[in-house]
Image (cartoon, rainbow, N blue to C red; front, side, top):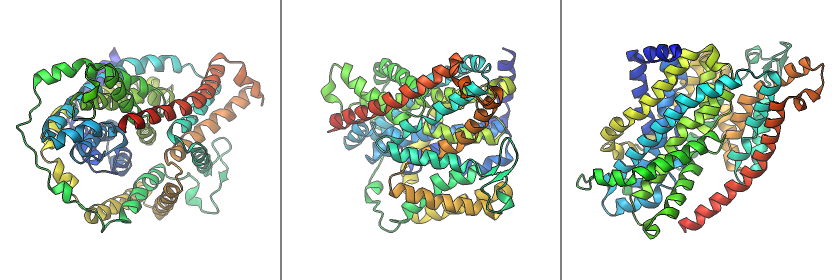
Length: 501
């Protein structure tokens, strides 16, 4: 209770509140612009946070995370093109409502549902994360190693049908994590005579390269072929207001979809896209008028938007307590926490309890102010979407280069940025997903360190992993997770494709 009170007092700092609101605004904008999702926003603003206090920085990034998840629904509703993958199911009814001149009603329903889903997940995070941390704090290196292995198994979830290509990406990420000084002996590895690499590859440069530069190269390919005529035709009509009666009718559905989203978010690596698809199908299944779904039905907007925003808070539970990202964007956030001295894992709440309560209270605040910020920004969304690529791409490129250089004032980080940007672009062409590379890079050094410490404890015997109950549990969980999740994800996507058809 004392840490909770201290955390609440720390959150009341005006700077923390301001940066939280700024993060929400930025996140919504990044979600609105197709191709610029939460990951891109987080890695672009990560260098900016170096001059901020940890709470200011992390709530800024968490605001981007939440805002982008909601923002993706805007282009899904207005243009029939999801701004983010998590808004894929919103297109089905949201865009149909726009065709019926009910874009404003659809946007308001998406906003209300997003706020409800986000608040429920934030409360779950506030209650569950400390309880989980109180258990995991007792974990020793063998348990931490098996947890890291389980975290690496998330590659199976984020790779989809490109399972083997995902493994290649994960293995490459783990290899890249070995660059620099050995965590046990201090000897340098794979630096090729460049002493500036002795501290390892810059995490922010790697993230900026793989996510931001890769997208910039892809968008630059068609920079002069973009047709924005459909965007210019969109005009909001405030006559199609969302009534309180419609909101009340959708409340039970939004609550149920929020629970689905929270459950999906806790499962590492699944993400908001699957949560929105599941909740949409479930809403359609139990509806008394399932034939209305896909024709511009307001419940078809409420269900997926409540679910995908409910993922944001619950995805942070395994991220913060176990060091296992609960969603792809959570992997980037995990890197941000590490950079600011709050290493996700069993010891996080013990070493930084009051700070973590400040962040979780701030996360709840973010989802509340989303309602007001989203409402104000709705009338300006079309103008944000209209930003031409000819202007956007140079700005993003300069921001990435400045961010990479500012971390250490060394050109080696810029070279790292460009190299990983080119690598990410090549991988996108051959369909090797980027998230496995990031997971391998983040968890690689952690798994190596705890594996070697475990061998020291057991006098170089691997039997230590098969004698401890928690280790056995996570080993079995890893095997089951890989087998079942790859099969289930494929079935869910096939079912959604059929229903969409």
